[in-house]
Amino acid sequence: MTTVQTRQPVKTGNRVKNALVFPGMGPSAFAEAGRFMVVNPFARKLVAEADDVLGHSLFDRFQKTEGDYSVPAQIAFFVNCLALAQWAEAEKGIDPAFVTGPSFGGKATAVRCGALSFADGVRLTERFARCLDEFFADYPEQVATQSFARTPAAVLEEILAELTAQGEEFEITCVVDDDFRMLTLRADRLEWLERRLRAAGGLPLYVMRPPMHASAFSALRVKAAEDVMADLTFRDPTIPVVSDQDGTVLTTGEQIRDLLLDCCTRPVDWPTTLSSLRRLGVGTLHVAGQDALFGRVGVATQTFTVVPANPRLALRPRRRPVAA
Image (cartoon, rainbow, N blue to C red; front, side, top):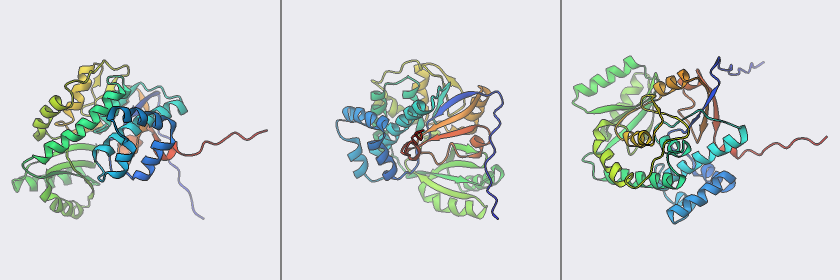
């Protein structure tokens, strides 16, 4: 006889507040995201508004353009995250006390908190995506970000010491959990890094191109300030934002603008962000978007009740009450 084990509810005590989380962007299948865009009423409305801003069909470009991080894919992810937040708030009556968004999720965060209009959020997302492409097209060397799990800090220190001894430049650009990080380095060192991680018992995952969140990209921050942000108006948010970089609570439009620019040069620190939310009395995280990472790691699931809001759940047929 097979025993089915169920996850025990997380004990949140007197932490009764909700936080809305917009996840970082990862590879995702078009089929599910695309179907959500044409079926879900919240998504259909936002897609139509995005089309007006862009001057073309977002769905068509998303369907026809290859690449997990293409410009249309980034805009579609941004739009879907906001639509999923609207769906979750309508379906579940969520009243978020705070908003946060690790990495790419900062763009949707800026709109939902009230600092940016949706139209400016679309412009921001499109411009930032093109800005990244232009910047790294002219970058003097190929750089990428390797994500990896099951690698304790002591083991990682040994690997980083070897890279230092080899004269390599690198940066930890995202801390996801105690044993889960992302490392940015020269792309021709990725194969060595993967072998070294596996030999130490680690688990290399996906590679991100273009990379982000490294101090070496200060010129990207300057370019983004000029090419992306120049004519965008940032208002003071109506919902406080918790920084994904250091857990600081942000309450002004200028702070939200700086948060988005700083994502070029400052690493994501998810454990510190969640520690801040816990101190602020948050017990439940509502994760709005296709997420295979930030809402699933132990630092989130062991401390908070995590409620996903993704296209699969939003497309699930609603059960009708049985007639008497």
